[in-house]
Image (cartoon, rainbow, N blue to C red; front, side):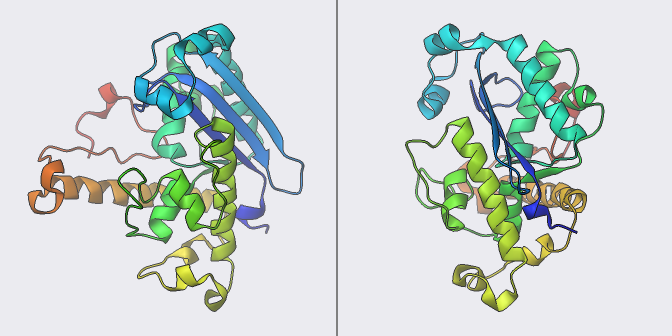
Length: 277
C-alpha cells in the first residue's frame, strides 16, 4: 500500500472577502494536483464576489474590489466551475489537502455552493467528503503546545507550519491561493515523511518536543487519517471552548458562553447548529 503522503493530492486554497466562512465570498481559488509520480496540474480562478470586501481581507490578498469587478468572472460561473473540479477530484478518490481546509475553506465553498448553485458541496459531489487532509489539524495534534512566534504570527498558521517543517517561505508570494495551496501539500508530505522515518532518525526538533504524536500518521489509509482528524479536531475545539469559559486561564478572552463548533470538515450552517458544543 502506498502511504498517504506519497499519493496524488489535490491541494486547495481560497482567498476571500472576509474571514467568516458563513458570510465570506470567494475571490480566488487554486486547485493543484501534485505527487503520485504524475506532473503537477494547476487550476486557478479569479471571481468577482459581487460584494464589498473587508479591508483586512484586501490587505491580506491584495485584490481590490475594483480589480475583482474588472477581471473576475461572475461568482455563479466561478463557483460552478470550482464545484465541478472538486467533484471530479472527489469522484477519483483523490484526497483534498489544505491548511485549515476543514476549519475554513471547505465550509466557505459549501456556503457558496448553497448560495449560487442551490445545493450543498456534498450534495453536488453526490457523496460525503471522507478524504480530507488538513495540515493545521495534523500539526496541532502531532506537535502540540507550540507557542506564538510573535504578536502577528500564530503558532499554527501556514507560515509557522511551513517554517517548522523546513520549507522556505516567501512572504511576497504568501497569501495567494496558489502559493498557499502548494505549501500545504508540501507540509503534508513533510509530516508524512517524519511519521514514516524511524524514531531516532527524525529531526532533532521533533525528538526535542515535550509531546509528539507523529506515529499516529503511520501506516494508515487516507480514509483512516480522515476519521482520526474528525476526532482530533473535536477534541481541540472542546479544549478551546473549555479554556475560553475558564476565567482563570483565558483572562481578557474569557467568554462564559463560548461555543466552538466541533464538526469537521463540514459544519452545519449557523441556523442548523442550535446549541452545538
